[in-house]
Amino acid sequence: DTPKPTNFLRQIIEADLARGTHAGRRWGGSPGDAEHHRQGSVDTARIRTRFPPEPNGYLHVGHAKSICVNFGLARDYGGICHLRFDDTNPEKEEQEYVDAIVEAVRWLGFDWRDADGHEHLYYASDYFDFMYRAAEYLIERGLAYVDEQSAEAMRASRGDFTTPGTDSPWRGRSIEENLARFREMRDGKLPEGAAVLRAKIDMASPNINLRDPAIYRIKHAEHHNTGNRWCIYPMYTYAHPIEDALEHITHSICTLEFEDQRPFYDWVLDRLKEGGLIAQPQPRQYEFARLNLTYVVTSKRKLKHLVDSGTLSGWDDPRMPTIVGLRRRGFTPESIRDFCERIGVTKDYAWIDYALLEACLRDDLEARAPRAMVVLDPLKLELTNWAEIFGSADHLEQCELPALPHAREGEAPPLRRFTLGRETWIEREDFAENPPKGYKRLFPGNRVRLKGGYVIECTGCEKDADGNVTRVLATVVEGTKSGTPGADSVKVKAAITWVGVQDGLQAEVRLYDRLFTDPQPDAGGKDYLALLSPDSLKVATAWVEPSLAKAQPEARFQFERFGYFVADQRDHRPERPVFNRITGLKDSWGG
Ligand code: ATP
Ligand code: MG
Ligand code: MG
Image 1 (cartoon, rainbow, N blue to C red):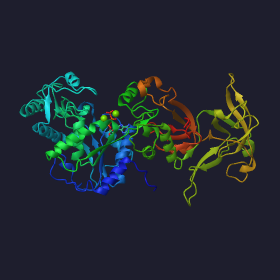
Image 2: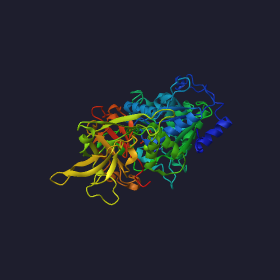
Image 3: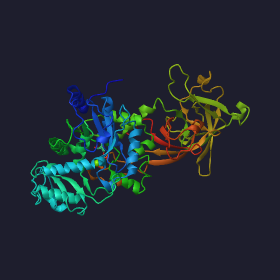
Image 4: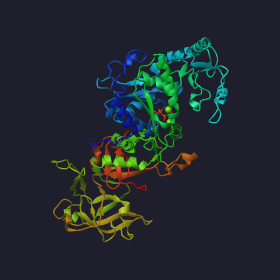
């Protein structure tokens, strides 16, 4: 194993481990409502990270980066990463998304069980009682107040980058009044929008996030986990540090958009520490640059539009950048993890080329994807001297080629078998009646090898009334069968792929390509819908070699000369094969 390249997060963690920053962590003293989660997890010197998705949609390739960073660091340093559903927004969250996220993280190869088999899967909503008590504590300390201004007035009084905010008329109300009013909020006595609980910090702070941010709002909405128990819900920015603290997270790693929120993150925890409400040492937040991938949009709103408008077939359309989409497209978990490893973790804003993701897939599959031949644009080839040479027009020659390019040491290469007969399917572009300069494939008078079969010599073609070629004619050159001593007796400049008419299987082949024509389809106010590529999907009725009859859904192959393909997860059946192109054999995008 080569050592992993370092990055700023690794350096922070290594310094913390060397210093024993987390070694003195005590577990008692501040139970919160998370106590029941803690059984069997009393380790003190390990790092704990978390991946905290909101269950309001499907995960995408950007989340994959966050998953790889958080679970990867925990794995590499002998720690644990929690999977936590940040479900503080009742209206948008659903069980369907929870299930899909669990499945996606597992599929990527990560696990939230510790060495004792304890599952570290949590919900922010499990901590609502604690969050509520912590809010009352802030009120009691004069650090929070109920504001009854309209949303508009509140926005206007926040000020902006050049102007300090102005105090709300409710900012000075008494602790008793605040407590009473907050309890009325909790008890459902106030309609939505009538009041919010705000932290009392500093309306003149240069960081707008510290100008008395809201920490609770009223929502008369049913929650996927807590049902109708609550009609007030904590704001994400208040809830998140508490979730981290109750779970004893050591390194709370997020994307750079949250950098300006860090002072509030620390404010919440510092105040709760003063009240003895959370254990020490408390978690710290670190930020890295989010993934931006060319030819991809990741905005949930835009992806939802592509699905709802019928532009794509669903959240798992193989052109979607969702994890379910990448999976159905044929990407392997290994290739996605490798991709995340290669792009690394930095604080610099950058665009990553989609071609890198494809390169990772090729690197993963090059050695392990079985090879197969396929004809995507079929034209019939007839070997006119077949009966003469083999004694019967129906004779079939057994042919074989290695299924994998490299045999394992000490083992014979696995073979795939197929038959050559009088008629075969060849690629339409492999014949030219009037060959352009330099053309090496079939044209009258030229010889090529049928890969894994015989050398043949083209003698002509048949055409329909419109002049379209309907059949290519050729003769077999005796004694040239691949793998026999005479194979090299006749030199040719090209070997072409083919599938036997006798044993070929018909298959639907879905040729996927970039969804957008522009590398940054939604940057700088561009209209991503106008940049949809008309060529992102072409469907071919193809012929494939018989070794593919046994392909299971999600089995991946290299179709010689065309790239990497996967048997479609949903639609593939042995009697009706469907293959998706994952990517071509080499980068054809100028990379
Ligand atoms: P929303 O569209 O609701 O804002 P989100 O993209 O923020 O969604 P979350 O479910 O809140 O989604 O994200 C979970 C985690 O994934 C967060 O820590 C977030 O920072 C991280 N994440 C989201 N997008 C990216 C990205 N493009 N690159 C790296 N990490 C990301
Ligand atoms: Mg979010
Ligand atoms: Mg987002």
